[in-house]
Amino acid sequence: MKIVYFAWLRERLDKTEEDVDLPASVETIGDVIEWLKTRGEEYALAFDNPKVIRAAINKTHVRAEAKIAGASEIAFFPPMTGG
Amino acid sequence: MNSETVRISHSPIDTAAETRAVAEAASNIGAVVTFSGICRADEKGAQISALHLEHYPGMAEQEIESHVEEARKRWPLFAARVVHRVGRIMPGETIVFVATASAHREAAFAAAEFIMDYLKTSAPFWKKTEGGGKEIWVDANEKDERAAARWQK
Image (cartoon, rainbow over all chains, first blue to last red; front, side, top):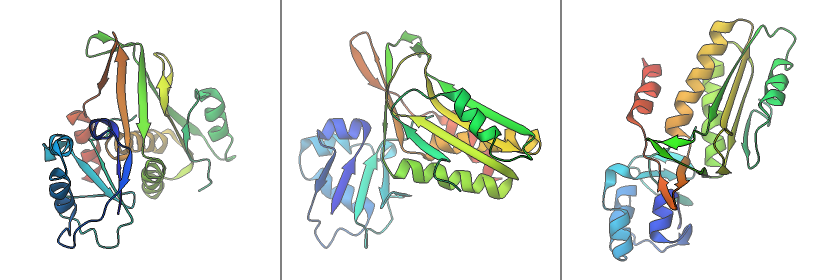
């Protein structure tokens, strides 16, 4: 699965994207976050506060309970500040 | 909708040329409303030397386009255009430009505001300020969430 990161999430993880093999037990966006948090201290810190994490599946906004089945790209980013 | 409706720009926006293109899009246009979001020289009282704008390529355009489509369903628009800068932006430069054209002003004003309100809360762009040797990510604004929510009534 391709995961992309933006803004301070990208900076804290020091990567713009990565390819990961998600275990079968990971079914939702919330599960992905919990799984990522087990991968190291930088992930645990970056994803510490779920209130400031937004997600997208295939470039469409989704909530934490969204299923990831069929996803080709998952994105994580902070609340948007454009305009 | 033509491909020029929504554009991400890496260089300064020529708002006069963009406005003219929208005004000339149809002969029955009687009102063009434009909004320019400008890079301020300060953020929360602190001087800044520049803004850095990051976006999610593909999704940013898609999100804006879907809200321009929604605006077209709500108001009789003849043309609309949104141009958003990314990269390093200097104070005084335009960050975002929105133009809407209709036969009369009411639809053009409302549609421009609607598009901007949704752009602020749902289009994946992020701002970082640069100044005093520091770079700071700008926090999302609750006021913007409320501005977008009022269109859901």
